[in-house]
Length: 318
Image (cartoon, rainbow, N blue to C red; front, side, top):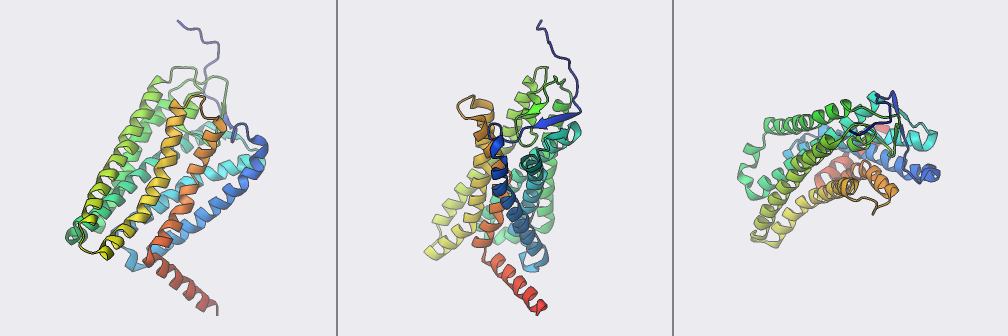
């Protein structure tokens, strides 16, 4: 039987390193992160306010977009202020409870957001492949149920992981080589076996993002087949333009997430740790910053609504 030379306990606090190996550049790194966070906050708040205020935007696509916007706000706000505190003030201590809460929010928001992207792909599929039933299929009550199902699924998948982290016995090493708390980063500080945690992480990834990507791919395969069967080039361009923004968001969401996940578990020493951590940090701020821009550029209705709101605000000042 292996002899454990460490005293097992639950630490009162952990120490977040920030970006390992780049500590002397933290102040410079913080500048783009702060700028992106402010843009993400402003962009998503404007987009959310626009959708809520404008009655003409209370359509399935925009209601799903509002849910995605809210998830982006929560994800960036859960992580970026803590990063900036590390970068600016070297506030590296985080209580055990706050770390667990951050794990819960980061992973549950990711899974919920993945579910929303599936719902948005289904919305585009119905709109293009079965337009006559679009209004009757995607009623407001159905949309709320879909969004509620995405939240419930995320809770059901994340809460067991929280239990697995809480049951571990930790050694005296309490340094997390990351800018925020995540499941495997904390589990690796345990003195006891974390095989169950590893299996759980892989299973959740496959049952959430893995299956979601398959559903999205199937939806867009059917959409592309329907688009190429449309009689006119104008109709094909219009159909593809409505899907273009969603495809950009899917690419932005899943590419860094899968890269971070697989390099964290299978990358070994082939990728420097600071590269992996930096990409993981960018993942929680870049998609939330770009999503409002992508939809604002590609959606004429959102652009016109925002411009009319700005002109109204300008006239009120005068």
